[in-house]
Each structure stands twice: as structure tokens, then as C-alpha cells.
Length: 370
Image 1 (cartoon, rainbow, N blue to C red):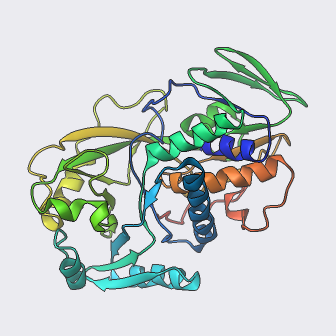
Image 2: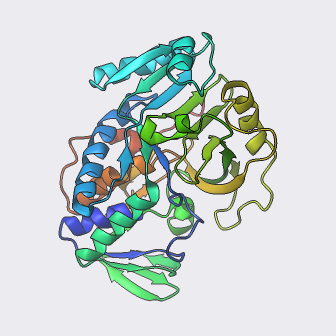
């Protein structure tokens, strides 16, 4: 999020310094790895205008950088009939190309998937896979090409608020009239007086060997990314992108942690729940033992799973992007553009940002969804 915001600021002609506490290419945050899911489909319609803009922004960066940043191989959302039709209704409202499929139709179209007619699928045809590491590289390269300065390995130790904000890091002290904080799981440490606490979660990211029908797991053959709601758990799959002959399959659920202290031994359920679903429905993945490769990701969750994109309620010259709850990467260029317009004092009337205010009231009884 920081790299994409810095890119948008530099694109708008704003002299920008981007500070990152870890070395280049680190895996301690939320943006490492080769793949993410990109999609229009969401449970809440508040994300559709952001999604539409995000595709446009990724296309602009792809043209500018000369890199392929995503592939529309399809995103298939598997769930029950009622939930599927509700999500399809939202896509229809925004004129997004999609199909509703029965379990039988899913298995006929995608022979590597085995779902009966207790399942329904929403195929978001523009959805697919985002090449995350390429996206990050492109944003950083274009940022620096425009004169932006990127400092890796500098931890922010303190922020001293005032007309000129002092940012104290392990490498020095910087003064700025305007500060944007997109610190992921460390947001509350840097801005401790925020009304809403964001919570870092340790997420298990598992890669499973493909043992048959290899071509059906390739995005270039229109193998879709998956989101799966079985009534209890939320699961996801990204076909063969990160590692040759392996698919990413995991659960959208983590363990609350301090962001600087990840789990040494993740709980067994982080892979066993996935293994059970794979065994029942994706027989060409080998779930007979533990995953072939285990990785981790840091989610930063809000209590309602919605983002925080706002000016700080106490400091007019501090702007916040955070709490992206495991679903923010695809929106990062759009969030960066919104934050840039806030910094410049420009209107963001294109989007309803009320659901993302730092001061919003959250109903504790509402179940957050993808």
C-alpha cells in the first residue's frame, strides 16, 4: 500500500519520501509473494466502485511499466445458492460480466474441480490472478523514476505531531508538512490514539503439489482463482503461479499476534482444514500429507473487515490507509490515489468513503465477510 501510494503521490508531482522498516524483498508484511486474487465480486457493494477504478489503475501502470500485472483467468466464488445469487445481483447492478454455475456445470467446465449440486458458483470473468511481486516492482520503479526516494531498512521509531511532522527513524529524522501512514500491522504502534484498533493476524499460506491434470491448474489456460464459503470456513485457491507444479490453497483465518512476533509453530488447522476440502473437491492436488511449501502472510484486521482510508481525526496533516483485512492488495493503486487526493485537498466524490472512516461506528453483531 505504501509503494502504490508513493507512486500516486509522485505521479501527482508531490515530492515524496517512502520509508520501509525492512530490507527490499522482505516477507514480513502483507505484500510479498508472486500472486494475489484480483476480482470485482464482493459481498458488499461498497467495494465495486473501488474495484472498477483499480482495474483501470493497474492497466495504466502496466502500460507505463511494460509489465503484465494481472491475468483475467476468472475468479470462481463457490458457496450456497442464496449467497451466490446475492453476489451476482451486485455484479449485475454494476454491469460486470459474470455467470452463475451449478455444481455440475462447474465440474464439467473445470475437470480438476469436483462439486455437486449442493454448491453454486459465481464466475467473475474479469477476476483472476494479480502478479503481486511484479506490481510492487512496477510501482516502486516508476516512483523512483519520477524522483521519489525510497529508503529500505529504516524503522520508524516515533512520530512527533505538529505543523511540521517529525518522523524519527533508525536512520535519521525527517520533517514533513504532510504524512501518510500505511504501516499495516504496525499502524496502532505508530498512531496509538486511533479510535479503532487494528489487529495483526498470522496467516498460513500453503502450497500443494499438483499430481494430475497439470494444465488445468495454469492461469494461461483459464484456470480460475477460487474463493470458497462452505458455511463454516472461507478458503481460497490460486493456481500455478508462485511455484511450478504447485497451487496456493489456504484458509482466510489467522491467529492474532504482535506484528513483530510471528508464530514459530502455526496451529495444525492452518493446513488441515484446507487438506480436508482439497481431498473432497480438488483430487488433483496432493493433500495426503503436509503442504509441499509453507509460507506466512500478515493480515491487518479491523473489527468489521472494512478498510480505514481517512484523515487522522486529531491531526489534519496525517492521512491513514490501513486495516485492509487480507483483501487490500488489489485496491492498492486506488487507495493510493484516494490518499493522494486527500493530501492535495482535492475531492474524492467518485467514491463513498463513509464506510472507511477512522471514526465510524462498528456494530459488533455484524459478521464480516469477504
